[in-house]
Image: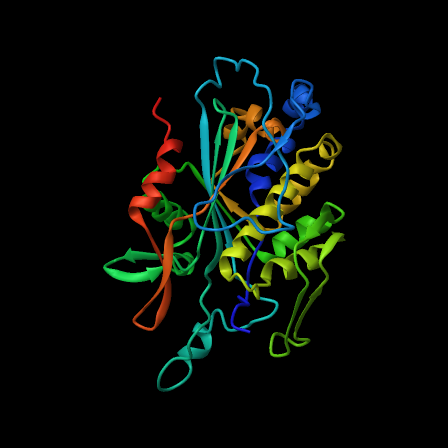
Length: 348
């Protein structure tokens, strides 16, 4: 079963950038309940897709809303905000060979190879308040990039250079300015979902996989297809699973779809009083690393609270898989990338 990636992480993380920090500002949030209650929204569900390379798969469609627009305040007109959301494959409870510097200092001969920390999931997110649209663009972690004159995968740059460096590389890849980044761990996602009390989700496929070599107890994934309530552990296993007949493209589709489902729940009025604690716990435990600040969020609350009413568009990065010097890369199609991303470049 070649398709299972060791550490796929859900990018429901965008809810923290565009949601949790907002609710942490309780005083501000309580003054913006009109956006939460959706008093000025339409109720006609629609799905917007700009997926040029992948067919929509059954069981993974989340309804979105294209509301009747109301005039925006002058402060928010033309406003956009963008971020790169990064899921790390770091699993210190399972593997103990991340940092072997102490051991290597005391042995003769060649050093023992250390496990690298990589980005397993990467998603570009843009919010445009003027057009009332959320745009999601999942980027394969094995996307080929040039770094210091060498050909590397985008995900491998996390352990070498950090999340802000990945943000800058994605900015160059898309030829678009990106404001923020957020880095999340698998344990962080698990804890956050459990803190929410789990989440209802329609799992698109039966998911079964086992790997007795992982950790002391081995890895077992056994999740049945259909609507159900998932715990944090269930979610991590579902999003680590990669044995789809459609390949890794389907895995990215499921990740984005699940992220949208979590965002829909987290921006509902029922979570207004619970989210400050969830967010504070996430920050205190080191689950999140981000350059997104509370002050910035306070300036963009309209976009956060109106999430349920904005149109959601999911793009597919044009390109193809190729093997280069024995390593499999995703090679972006530059002309295709410029074509799909051009309309989302804010021109003032």
